[in-house]
Length: 541
Image (cartoon, rainbow, N blue to C red):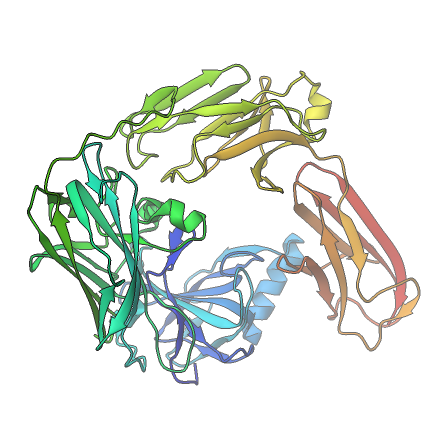
């Protein structure tokens, strides 16, 4: 891009259910800035989507790497014409095109597109990635030599300590201990009058982020080191990641704290099941063995890519006597070993958790709430605890109550109940059960979706002269299962309508396919279970 490199997001930042796999380049809140190829190569993939990276271009380079440019507002003219021809030929807005080598060769500095905020972007910026062409694994783009002005050290918000087995304790308790940090004389210290006494196997976590000049963004640090009596017991560095193990981030953070929006705390120890590739050194899986009257002088060293560093020193004091063993008195139904498949079946429900989905062996429990509202056609099942993380999706099968015909169950979906919100996760009806594959534990039930989507015209009405309008726009919404399909035609011919789910906006930008004169418009919108609405009108140009 033709602007100084300033980052709104760094490689390896912790996001919900994943790490950030590139860098987000700030565009000062503007769209339409020129995006250029960083090196010679050929365009190998083009994506048009209302989700994820939105409009995106992938360039394959001779050195074995692929660069990705995401959230683009539009492509250059040649790519736009190529994509548009595919869309009209297939009568399909969303595209994922594998481009043959030689179709679009590029040199370093060639204009390929223009920056935007399409897909899941929360604001205008360019998402940029470098991937290994052999396995598609992302690599930190800053390793390629891109320079960022940053002379500010990371911020340390606090730490957390965790007892890791039944004989462990922190300040006489088996609960985690959260401690805030502050800065004194350019060094971070834990909150005043805070004493840490511990016994047994203890883990430590840290809450921190990086900052830079000219931006309020909270970015991810590059290196995290934890020392015990000057010996490094944990060292992570964000050089590369793997999409195959991305969801293991859920076991690397205090999932309950993040899910409850308390804080983002990154563990400096490993769970029993951990496949991340970010660790450069780990001793005893990062776990600290606290013994009677033995103290541990601990220090965190947190650095950004430019080498700006912050430290936090604290002491863990060994308990003077052995504390009582903790006994978990909560009732449970079975023990689920993380190494083995776990199956549980009760009246009206089946649960199948694959081996390796859990991060530790757990006590499994669920309950059934029969006091449901009129909209549910099954009990509400409270499965495990929504603060228990998963690395792999599991299978959930729920039986409706009472038994209903296949014709009625075509309108059924499984929902996840999040407070007052009902989030559809779809489902397949077969052999008397609705089957889904959730990625979270929580509260689930079957509901019927019997209402059609709503189509609200934004700038068109019957007989309107659209000669001075650039587009035809609608707001579309669905009360439960969500919009799945939309199709617009003018005079019986398909038109390219785009979808922005952030504001439920469906729109057609006038092009050569709609000329002057009187026209008939038809828009069809369907939800995930087939409920359909149709809007028709006449207009002129």
